[in-house]
Amino acid sequence: MPHCELSYSSDLKTDAEAILNEVEASSVTYDSGAVETKSRAHPAPIFHHTHPKAPVALPAKFYRIAAFTSAFQKDLVKRVAAHLTLCRWLSVDITLSAQTYHTEFLE
View 1: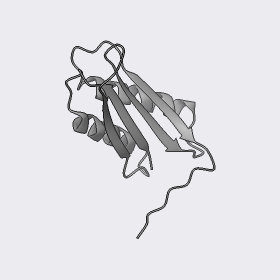
View 2 (view 1 turned 90 degrees about the horizontal axis):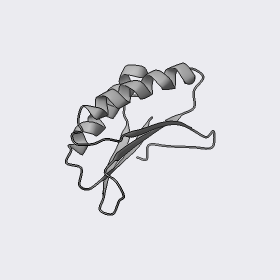
View 3 (view 1 turned 30 degrees about the vertical axis):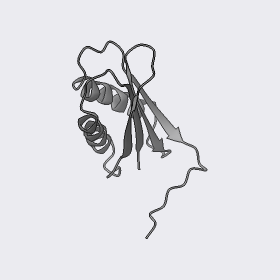
View 4 (view 1 turned 180 degrees about the horizontal axis):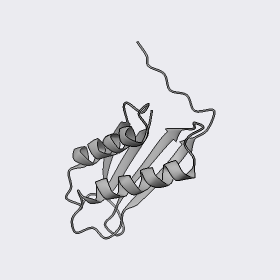
């Protein structure tokens, strides 16, 4: 399952929940097996230069190659940017988790 830790300068007036919904929608569009995106939003009260950063981490899978991540990243940028006004910078980073990463549903 993908994870996203959205962080943004606190002067950025945006709907963080809408952005997280867009990240999840993009994840499902590019990977039907990615049903949920675990995500959080963190406004930063101390910052230099207004900007958001939306890194997405995915478990490594055989089909998540350069073409996949490039298309996914372009879609994420488009979706997230649609929710930003008066913002000149946006960082989106797609990473693949190491083989040692483990997540488990606890009952």
